[in-house]
Amino acid sequence: MSPFPPHLPEALAVVAESKGGPRFLNIDGEEVKTGNYSFTFEKHLLLAETYEKLLTSRTRKTAGAFYTPIDVAKKFAETVVRKGPVVDPSCGGGIFLLSAAKQLAVLGGNPKDIVRNQIFGADIDQWAVAVCRWELAHWAGVDPEEITGVVIADPLIERPENWPKHFGSIIGNPPFLSQMHTTTVRTTKRREDLRSQYGNLVKAYTNEAWLFLALGLDLLEPEGQMALIQPLSLIAARDALEIREKILTEASLEGLWVDQSTVFVGRTEVCAPIVKNVTSDKKEVLRYVGREIEEATSGEYPSDPSNWGELVADLIGLPDVKIVSSGTLGHKASVTSGFRQHFYGLVPGVSEQKEETVVNPLITTAMVDPFDCLWGKKLVQFDGRKWQRPVVDLEKVAEFDRSVSEWMLVRQNPKLFISTQTRVIEVVVDEKGDWIPLTPLLIVQPYEEDLWALATALSAPVISVLAARQAVGAARSVSRITLSSKQLSELPLPSDKKAWGEAIGIAQTIHSSNDKGLEELWLSFGATINQAYGTRDDELISWWWRRHPAFRRKNKQNE
Image (tube, rainbow, N blue to C red):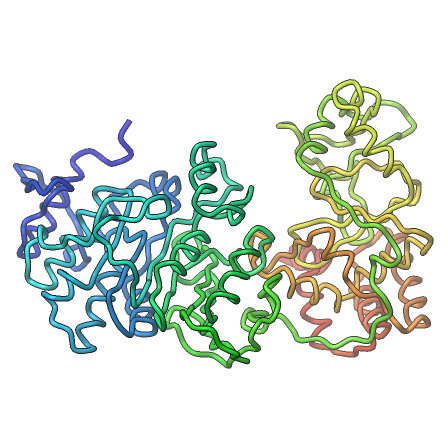
């Protein structure tokens, strides 16, 4: 079944003809006739924009294509393009290349020479390539046959033969192919082909958009500049570490644009590193925000590729914090989390609790609320069905996968569970020690320290801020926090033992209360545990409280 709608070529030819030509050619250079076909379209749109509208949402999603508005492409071209030749290695319908061509003309180039000799692009979508050629030809007043630098190809695997060795500018919006979604997951052959080209840069969850940055670094000539729009995950994702390191060691991070869901359909959060092929000792990075690509204050140049979250934290509304701490969580407890094996390995052993005595309740992320485990209080989803009181028979798990059962048995002691993809850090305390964690819960097993002491410390507003600054781009959105085991273990512990002790008492009062939404008690807790970290900041408390589950429940009740 074709991914393209019926009569797509004829529709594109109709639009091209309505704009006064030139003729619309297919990928083989043959003119597409309109015949008797007609349809209603928005005459003010570019052919490239009309092409996007003609594609189904499923086709765009499978291709990872989030097309760029023309005004955004124009601003990027003005910011990045200083010289040719220019390439967009995933050109789509040509929005970026058209903007780049116009920018080269502003810099003094002749339009006909620009599109014939200075503009290059590639895409695996044959009709996108045909549209791109037409757009450039229409602007410059030449025939699409003369646009020879735009070809159907996959440059991640093989560079087109007619491209120059290096480029003065690279610009574009490569496809976002997340490996967390079944529609965009790589085939085994695709993974092998990419690894043959990029080696260790290709990991289990590498988004192919990141690899276009690696390609761009190879294509840039000295002093050349590159800006490729990326998923925000580039900033903090573990599997993007080597890409970030490659940028910092082989080139210079001149700027970084961050957009919070105002540009792309589906409110996709994006960024774009502006990279220059020079080595430098820069101390600052220019920062840009919003649809207008407006310059904000500069940020400190990242010395560590492990996380660029600090570079953009203030741009997305995260408070700045200073604390006085004493050691880290990793000094007091082990921190672990399961893998897919530990998720699916539990399936044979899970059932609804029937006995009066509860043994080995299964705890999911949805059951974790600040200081309150919701097991038995709400329905949760697991293995394609809903559960109210799920329990785990570890003997049945052992029959299916002994290693999973043994992994769970090692965690049969008092511990903490921390949820992921939350707005603030949410902790529950397993005092009995028989809860079974469902991946991706984080598990904290104290060496000697009191459970409630660590639960209280991790629940501090200031710790949620620190975690959020680390997690920028790693979660599903910038409003969510998700940490790795290592990141959680590196979070600091309080230095003021007296205030810490008072906060523990408040936390236990909240835990034992029938009303977990007591605002005054929560605010008192937040202020007291923050004091234990040496900080008193009402704005920080307000930031934390507005994101807190108890605050959101209270607002819902008042609606």
